[in-house]
Length: 143
Image: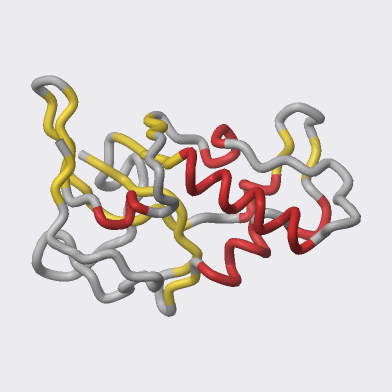
């Protein structure tokens, strides 16, 4: 079951704080046990990069593995994971602790063991998933 008190918008809310007080930087070691990625979001990102470079890109790759998740979901709507506050899988309750701020490491093509040219998909991601004072976000952290 997925619950969300927020309505779907096309813009991320950088001021959204999941648990009162000051929002802090999250990572696996500082406040999250799980990293969730939505396959539909990855598919949309891949298509945006392809649209940006219709002639193609050397070493091109945009796959879930690049984002190093340990949970992959597949919803019909891209970026719907931004709206989840908690989810239940069997008897386990997962609570959202905030978005995953991305670094340049997502440029790695794991099949060819090299970086994707033109800074992709990081460059395209920065054009529509950048939150001022937080960074470029993609995926969510859960406890």
